[in-house]
Every structure is written in structure tokens, then in C-alpha cells.
Image (cartoon, helix red, strand yellow):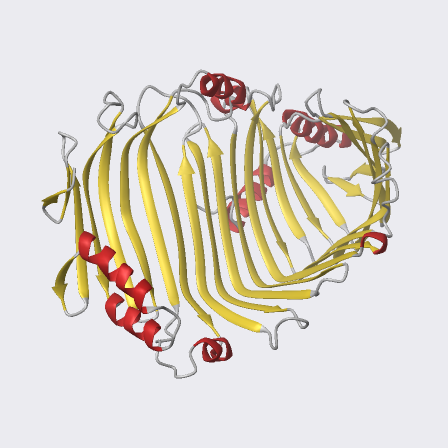
Length: 516
């Protein structure tokens, strides 16, 4: 996926805006375009406005988060914010160094059930300047640090939760040297936001301490550096979370990408008299991209250089440590109904999972079983036909109740299905079509047609070694070999192969022998 609004693009946008004549905005222009962006997300926003010379003061800023009527309401209160017009036509935006954001929530089912929380926000050396025109505004912001902390928490309406407070639940989040550039613009039917941000170290703390219940959970994490890019287009009339399909058809798109380095996490937990545990993980780098639009949804995530540690001192004599070379995940699928088939895919891969020697020596003191790292990869794609929009939950629910499948899968392709480790390996691939017109040949299932192949190496030797070290019984190994003998054929020294074919006549062949 392409990077969204890279630095060069931001510089170009800034140059274009700077070259416009006149390139001036008022504080009201900046506030109006920002508020329009917020309303386009489906939120309500309002504030008390007052003018003092060149400064527009916004106080009592209220964000109302739309929730289904059956759930209740959620409101966020913030401010004050000062927007001051400058002689060069720009607008400087000033936030207090220390401010509080209040969050109020109420349940519709039980009006007595209420949430009242306060988050403190601390900024150091913050600057924020907006430039451009009333319909195109570039906002650049930076701080030396930014900190969020849960300062108050009150829950009412249920005796089981009324005792919870910010003393039992601690939450903090801090960002070092955050910088961002956000480009707001509007056209005839859409509002757009394109943004890029960078940050130094990010740290968080999340602690739950419930002495009466004997529960204590501590979670900490840091990231050395983060880069994020983001692009969002929304209908100017706003989106309806109960009908996102209409928004997608009206031009709603979302693209996001993030890159991190030097991530660490730690989790310490204990429940009553049970043994406490410590989990620690580190990764060298991570990347993720996400895309949503009328063409479908796609996500890709990758992490490299992973180190893991787990210890339970009361039960384990030592910590279990391991490493992973890399972990990848990707998925894509359509979201809007169509009479034509559309592509969907799913892939996950883990490379070089290794556990330290101490654990292996407990299981295999002789060292007979190879300790080569474990890797696996699954890569599947398909052609599907959606009979209803994925986000139209009401229609999909009705179809399921009527025993109508909202998704028809016409083709499935296994590009790769690989597993290797401990001296053995499996590689597989295949392709099948599915006929939804024939639901009789396979007892109500769409009739498949196609072939699949699997190749195995080193499996028999691995079974022998597991029996020798006592990790597998002779009977279990014999049953495994019998199953392999029925489904595979020998093609080399400790090399097996299996070919499965399903014909148009619904016949099933395994290695040329008819099984059905």
C-alpha cells in the first residue's frame, strides 16, 4: 500500500497554499472547517464562542458520541481553546498547558448506571499554526511532550462497580516530541483529512488493583519511535453508523499506515492465592496498513525481531524464553453486495520460532530431536459473491434466520500451506471451485471441483526420534504411520506426497485411487 501523504506531499501542499493570493484565514474559518470534519464523522460538536480582539475563544466544547438508542449516551467535554489571527494570515491555536477532559456516559436500559471520568492532558512547549484558505487548511503542530492520565473515575448504578475509582484503575499515556501535519479540505460532496505524524518514545501504563477481590494486573509498554499517516474522506452530511454502506457508496474512504520501532511490553498479573505470572515481549520493528472503501477492506500487519519471555516463579523453575524472526498477517474482503464475484484473501506467516535450550533439554535430554526453528505460512484467496452488504447487520441477520447464506464462495485457492520444524516439513497448495447449484452431491454443501497437493519430508524420521526419547508411544507412532500410508505415497527417501482430486461427477480420488 502506498504511504499516505508523505513529507514531500505535505511540503507541496504547504507551497501551494503559501502561493495562493490571498492566503488568509480567520479563526472562524479554522473552527468552521474543523467542526465540519467532526460532524462528518457522525459526532455532534458545539462550543461557546467569544471574540476578544483577534482571538476566538472556544469554551465548553462538547463532543456527543452517537450510540444506538438501546445503549445510551456518551459525551466528552473539553476546552478552552484560543484561536488567534496573525498578521501573515495564519491562525495560531493555543491550548492550556494543563487541561481536563470530562467523559460522561449513561445507560439507556438502566438510567441509574452512569460513568463519570476525567482525563488530564499536559502539554509542554506546544505550538499549533493553521494556514490556507477557508476550504483548504494545513495545520502543523508540535510539542516537546504530551501526557494523558486518568484522574477521576466514578461508576454509579451497580453495587458491584460503584467502588471502582482511579485509585483502583490507573491509566496513563505519554508521547515524547510529537509532531503532526494535518490537511483539511472540502469539496462539493466530501470533506477530507490527510495527516502525517511522528513521535519519539511512547509509554503507557494500565494497572488494575482490586485488593478485596485479590486481583492485581499491571501492564506497561514503550515504543522508541512511531510514524503514522492517515487519510479520511467522508460525506459532508455525515455518516450513519447504523448504515455505513450508504456512506461507502457516497465516497467514504479510510487509509492508514503506521511504522514503529523498539516496542516493549510487560504484563504482571496475580489472582488471589494463585501463582503470579510475568510476560515480557520485545520487537525490533512493526508496520501496519489499513484500507476501507467501496472497493472493500484490507489490512496488513508485520512485526520483526520478536523476543518473548514468560515466567511463573511458583510453578516453573525458570523463565520460558523464545524468539520469533517475523510475524505477518494480511486479509482483504469486499464489503458491498454485488452480482459479480469479488476477491477475498487471508494470509498469516510465522518465521523462525525458537525456544531456548533449557526447555528442550527437559523434554529431550539426549538432544536427538532437531531444534531447528518452527515456521508456518498459510496463504488463501477466493472469489466470493455478497448477497448483502457486510455492514448491513439487520439484513444479514434476517437472511441467516431464513437459512439463506449471505456469502457465496465460488473459488478457493490455497497458494501456500507450509509448515516446517524439528527436521520435518509440509508444503501444500490447491485450487477448488464450488457449485452452489449442486447441493445434493455432498449432503447440502456446494459441490467442490479441483485438486490439491501436499508434500511431506522428514516425517518418519521425526516419529522415530519422538518414540526414542519417550515423547510418543509406539502405538501412537504406528497409528500416525498408518494414516499417512492411506493418504500418501512414497516419492523419495523419507519423502511423501498426496494428491487429492474431486471431479465434476463428485468423485474423490487420492493418489489416483477412488475414495468416493
